[in-house]
Amino acid sequence: DAGVIQSPRHEVTEMGQEVTLRCKPISGHDYLFWYRQTMMRGLELLIYFNNNVPIDDSGMPEDRFSAKMPNASFSTLKIQPSEPRDSAVYFCASSLTGLNGYTFGSGTRLTVV
Amino acid sequence: GDSVTQMEGPVTLSEEAFLTINCTYTATGYPSLFWYVQYPGEGLQLLLKATKADDKGSNKGFEATYRKETTSFHLEKGSVQVSDSAVYFCALSDRNSGNTPLVFGKGTRLSVIA
Image 1: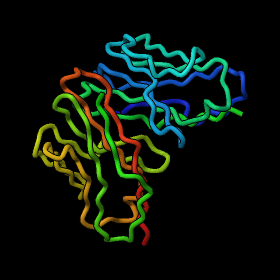
Image 2: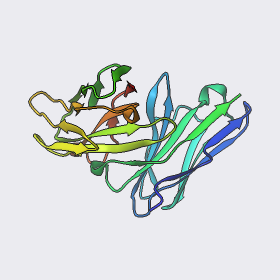
Image 3: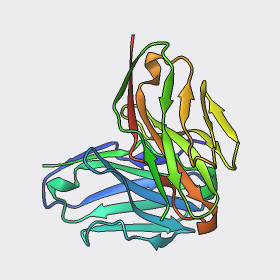
Image 4: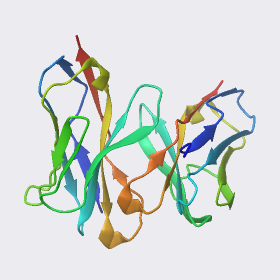
């Protein structure tokens, strides 16, 4: 298995632009998680899905953030409009069940200038 | 609610030194416990886990024992290498809460110098 695949690996964009991050989970995993990592706040859970349905989006910082999972093999995290404080590394992770731990992708490093 | 507390870093050790990274937890139920490692520029990787009291998880020379009486899951390694330099995260999954997300500690950065 190729693991959890995220794209792009790096994204540099100007303030106000729309940014879309992509994730392909491991086949057969029922859970998908989006995290954000910064030096100041550490690892933050933004949203998670179970069987493609959003379960908890209370970690999404603002309405500028949205996430979708149209099918079991693909999810997107969109920021519109982007702001410099959104600069961070965004991770996607998937899991068969939470009890077995997660498999993380390599992350997308987002820089908003 | 459930929580995980790790020792503050950074931790700097010489090669072949003994490593301990402390982790304690608070949970309402009977959690599974995990250690994840994040190497520079990469995502988190599962290092080891333990699912019940007195279980010992081990991998790559690292060990951690699930201690219910002290609510702890300290990570240890007898002889660290430069390649162990990374950030280590302790985490728990509370089975009584169903399949809710893992609760992570803040991470401990380890630097091993030759």
